[in-house]
Length: 388
Image 1 (cartoon, rainbow, N blue to C red):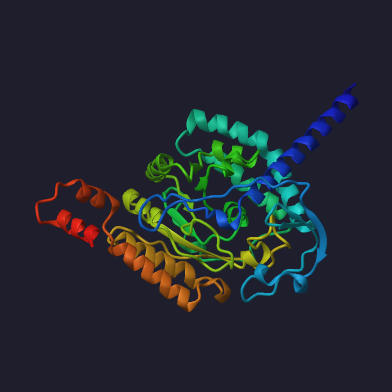
Image 2: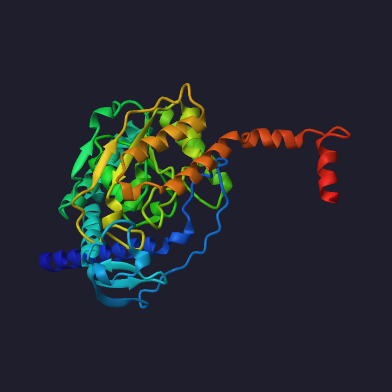
């Protein structure tokens, strides 16, 4: 009887891991390049996004053998040689690639999370009793899950530069990093020697085991299509910073197809100003070579990932636009050339940020619109334009 019970327990564990892995794979495949995972717009705190979701069907996949030389041109990481990914499956309508290395990453990530999950639950119960606001015990479990799951596949950043710039763990700061892939989360959570919360789309928090652990650690969720939820997310993030938590955000809001850094959204800098929290820029280098946007998981074991931590920026005497410019320049300075915006794109992004800075805040625009117009004033001007 004991052996039979043990066998049943093993079967249940294996089945749970398989189901969690499938759920994670589906969630990753569901997020495409055209979904534009934007948390905050450049002109204000929120933005309405047109999203065309789809649910990939597992029976709709191709099994193929490929090398870097055989990869389509549009799948290349600009300026870099592709990682040979060998035998692989193409999942979903976008034919996102999952190879043997990626499946190994996925399996080890879910296995480590499953093994540590009981400790995460116990840490959550302790935190709810003694540390409800910060939940450091749960943060530590999330840190060890990310670190052990990456070490189990022999991955760690080749170099972490500027660790001396990290503020004390007791200070709530806003970490801002360029966004390349899901591996960003594992890299920062596992190897940045500080506790912090993420601002994440609510779909991530629904991933089995991983998302549940993030919920217990009080990571901050946002519903992208719900304006009220986004405003509440801003308030929750400010309060979390004031409670002494550090928060990590990706100011681009989404990853780019080429792997080059994209434009920043205004929301994180509004949060930093209102919370009075220092901003710590972080450059994540070379991750996109190993985990491009068209892959479900990494195509190979990353060997040259660098994390560059820049000096903190105090928002006290800066406008939001100035704070954004400094953070953008700092992160860009730490990136390799193939991840930096092209000169023409950089000029376009700078002009866009300048026009956004010159525009009045949305609250002022609403107040101006609510004021009655005098005869012959602005209202008449609008009427004349309509007649013309």
